[in-house]
Image (cartoon, rainbow, N blue to C red; front, side):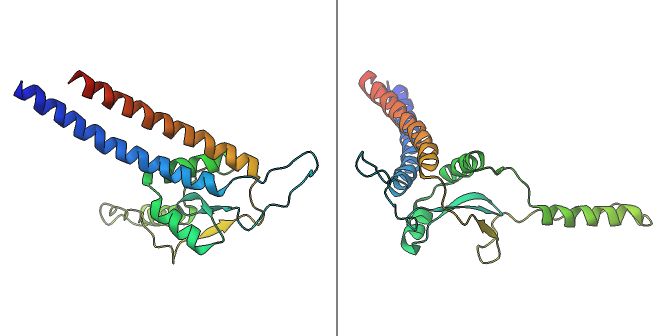
Length: 187
């Protein structure tokens, strides 16, 4: 009975940690969904000029696609709550929805590596070619590049893309919570 209790507690702790991660990812999408709400229209008012400055820009950076809000406080909060899992999903979703590949390599780094390899293989061989230095992953934002679209993204398309992923994360949280509840009831 002691071993079963220890096993239950181990599984519960693992599930609890996983649930926390999933809830954090869900929170990121909750936050974004609240910010990218489209202006509403009615039968009498056919178009409503939404606050275009409130809509984020879709930007391509050296680390992929991201949302860039004009309001510095909103952007700072997004950066604080962003999780690695949510960042990856947002990068891929924006790449698919707004026409850029999230798997696009950084050309400048690859060209430098290619030039170094070519230079070492076309000259006299003085021994084995030294290994290439690894690509630096965490480049500070001060030296990274960002190319944003001038126009804000289509509100409906951005909202649809984010809501699909919000739904996926919500389902994952609900499924894990239900499993944890079943395990607790069985114990």
